[in-house]
Every structure is written in C-alpha cells, then in structure tokens.
Image (spheres, rainbow, N blue to C red):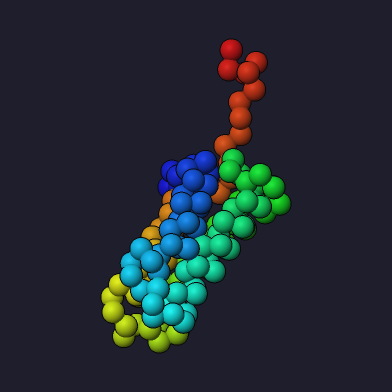
Length: 128
C-alpha cells in the first residue's frame, strides 16, 4: 500500500538532503572527520541533485523517472545505514553512527510507502 504522494516525497527529499549535509554538526560528530562525516554530506548533496533532476512535482529538470529516483533512494539509504560497519566507525560514539542507521532505514521505509508515479493533474473540464 503506497500512500505517500510524490509531492510529499519531494519535500522530504530536500529536507533529508539538507539534514544529511548538516548531520555532522547537528549530532556533534563533525570533529571526528573521515567517512562518518563525509558520507552524509556527499549523500545529502547527491540527494538534492538527483531530486532536482527527477520527473516529479519538485523536480525543475525532469530527466530521471520517479521509479529510478526511488531506486537511487534505496541504494543510497542502504549504503548510509551500512556505512558504520563498512567504514569501521560503529565503535565510535552513538552520536556518530546512530544517525546513519536511523536515517538510512527511515528513508527505505518512506520509499516502500511512496507512490512510484506523480499524480496526474485532472483537466479543468473534467472537474466541472
């Protein structure tokens, strides 16, 4: 059952992208440097870029179909969630690895419930 419209998904994309870029400072792990800091920043920038290129309500340059966007979301989110183990910062303080895992899993859940296509606008004549 997919109940998150692409219009809502798009807003979440930009908010999550900004939050990922800010995460090292928001959660206080910016000073540790390395992959724990670089990964959310790069993924946040990437999310904003491919959102700008997605064929949905919030994409000004409609090059990427929504199903492809959703696939990007899953791959990036899996990478984000697994990155503490892949790059060995799972033993760091929880403020470093927990955001990676929580955001990664949350985005996958959002994808599962997101509509794969934007709703079509109903022509004015059909509404009357």
